[in-house]
Image (cartoon, rainbow, N blue to C red; front, side, top):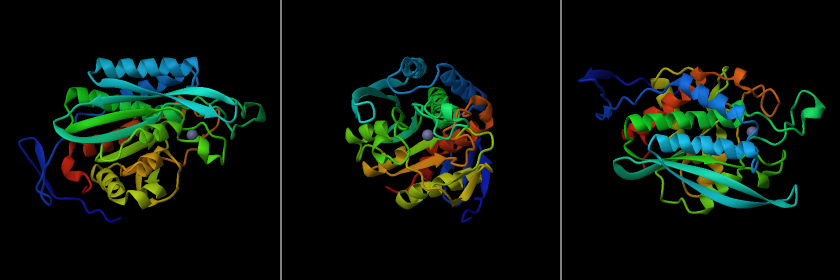
Length: 308
Ligand SMILES: [Zn+2]
């Protein structure tokens, strides 16, 4: 581990980081229990498979949540020419923007779609059935929905776009062309120079949480990955392990290809991945809060951000 704890002192309620001389801003508190409720609510709609009623209901729920908190909500509707069904599938990304003081902008991203098939189901009859996606999908969205509460409580230092993408998990195993559809569309519309950096959160709700440095993030966005893991260590969050483990094709790839430095916070050691058992009882508010606290700390403290 390369991190060494920084000496700090409290002055007028603001922690001063002695080694970098920038005041540490204490972010608003991330409520893990409330985030967990957002996870459960999404699952109650049923599997949020693209272009289904459950997906539309979940989208309405997310949009209302963000609007009520004063975020500006926009959507990106796009057609996917689906090679599996030989039909056109309509997919929708949601972009909720919290406005801050400066011109800079950050993007935080999660996928809200559910995998349409559970290829690792415990019994063969379930392998073609969609998953509930409590951790694979709903957990990342739940974290970003709770982040919106923080932004409503206190303006972030710059604009933050919360991007909930569709169609991340559409592809059959091995068919790379049919994954990350929503984030590809988001990037295709032009993101270069629009964001200082981006962080994707995926599979962040496992109650047995183990988050390692994801290998593509390490390769393409190491300065940002350093910030994430140093921040987790400084906050004393012991479910972040400071070593590289899995390479995961996820939405951060689309952001990096689009020209935005982006890392993926992901716990890829999830026993129920792509099974019918990916349900809320496997997840916890505490795990959501571990990730949410790291995000909040980074967003509210520009002195931590990687160099441009
Ligand atoms: Zn998945």
